[in-house]
Length: 480
Ligand code: MN
Image (cartoon, rainbow, N blue to C red; front, side, top):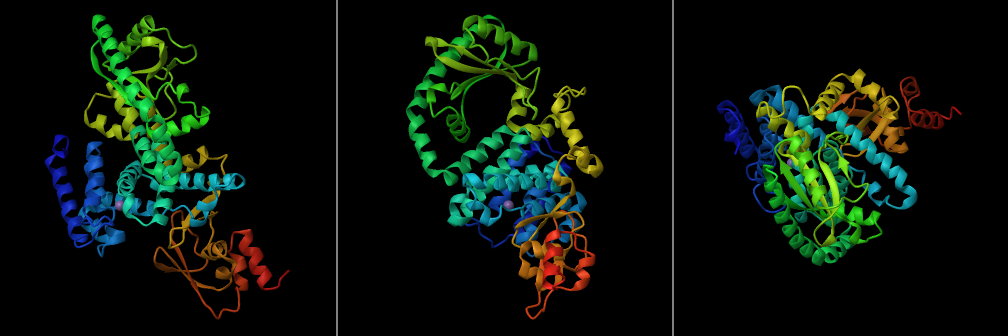
């Protein structure tokens, strides 16, 4: 598949990366009992289907090497250069982002706000830490395969990973316009998080689904006839079945009334040009009366994530209410693969057009520039407390957000007052650091404790940044 769009040199890079990974993971098994290399292979395969570039695919093969094998990131850098190594270390860092274990319990109404805030922090941190959008796409492909093989993990892990997928990864995919990814991730997580609701939904829609699919087949034929008569070139007409989880959410909003979900099975018409899209809309409305207020022109007014399409809902055959979506082939790919489709079209040359007619690609470029230019990035988040916060991890992957300039002592007190009091030394990203070291976004901080310690040192007060640390130190020293 990769031969279709990559050069010989690119293919060589990928091959070397595969061999390097296969050797590094040699002898290791996945929880499924399969050889470990199956996993990076699946991730690389997903990226190839999205036509991502060669460094990304190489990084996909190598993404678990530094954390799970004796080979280090420096080995990768020596062999594959800084670009591939940068992608791998980005993916590895994102892999350390975890929902705190104790947050999983926080699902009761009164605690939702706290939970939502924690989740929003994680999403932002994800964005901020990635720096290169390819890192997120590799991470999403990684998560997709882990979700596909989740059944082999212990129950507690399943819960955490499925929850993260639903709360962090799927919304991120959505934000990047990767609708197909979002749908798949959600549907994979759904049965783990809401098992009862999942099974209830399946039995509820089973019959209705079959009936609607037969119906859509009839509409499809009728419409195709009409379009041919009007000399519209059809690229594809198909009946799209809604993803389960998004259907579940929709039902929730509609008092569980399946009759009100008009797009359970929607008809999708894909044509060559934007002009044809509007022509098709006219033909559809001439044939079937539209429902007022349900015509949406996302071609003229794309959704914030770049989604483009015409939507209409009509009184269709037998007077049944049916949703029809109309778009070009390019819009279709962008709707399914979002930002990832960018590579696909870039490589295809002028499919996208040099004039950047797709606004969202422009927006993406702006977004990436912002991330590369921290000042710009900060400006856009000015109204946000995130501006002055950094996110650091415990070695177990728990996230703590601290003010900028915070030190390992602040971190220690944030984890636990006793850990703060007995803090005796620190390692940042595995290397020994001083206790007043200014922590950076994404640092992994380990605190060395002295059990015999009599308490905090007075001179810590000169450099700690958080009020919590200050207060607890003063209290211990009886300075109050
Ligand atoms: Mn992985």
